[in-house]
Length: 204
Ligand SMILES: CC(C)(COP(=O)(O)OP(=O)(O)OC[C@H]1O[C@@H](n2cnc3c(N)ncnc32)[C@H](O)[C@@H]1OP(=O)(O)O)[C@@H](O)C(=O)NCCC(=O)NCCS
Ligand SMILES: [Zn+2]
Image (cartoon, rainbow, N blue to C red; front, side, top):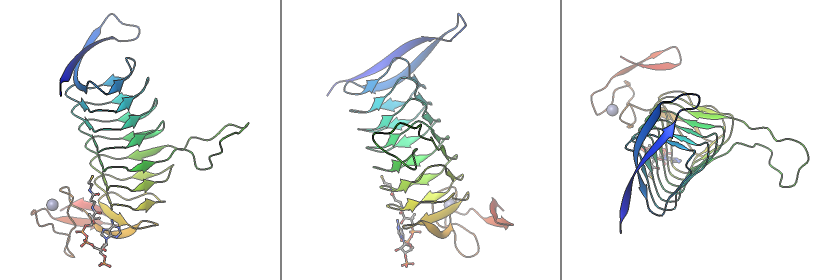
């Protein structure tokens, strides 16, 4: 198998400045020339990054992912295989999205309609993890470093550092920066400690 490193030049709108971008694109990936891809990002086979999509640096976009115009993917984001990131979905830095996670941007879809549909935006905040096969309803915020269990159906906002599981997804505990569950004293096996400030978990 031969892989190609890609060096792309892009002229910033309204300026003479030329930005050189270096990222890695598998020869069987589709990357539209008007998408933005940050340096050291890897885009693997059968991924499709559309015109107007934005992907940060150091990301890993695995086989079969689809990133639509209007989607925003931050830096150091991992999209495991077969994840579609639609218009209106923002994934902040360091987000992990497991294989075959489903995002949604239209709550009341119809195929043949005459009225306009409403795009409901979803944000996954810095450092959050979404387990494989989870479905994230639209108009939601998944808070920083939250963890969504594999196969869960998320219907409500998820608070930062919380773990939610099931269908519908419910609070299951608190997560550390490292992704593990905290014990009853809000301590992690990695050594980190937290405290509750009202409803919010904060580093101790
Ligand atoms: C959510 C998660 C982090 C919890 O891990 P954990 O803290 O070790 O949890 P445990 O295995 O101790 O389970 C605690 C309880 O939650 C339940 N549970 C765990 N994961 C669950 C899930 N995804 N959905 C529903 N329930 C779940 C367990 O059955 C158990 O229930 P019980 O107390 O009634 O027995 C983990 O199960 C998970 O889903 N990780 C995501 C992995 C993944 O998708 N990786 C991506 C690869 S592409
Ligand atoms: Zn930890």
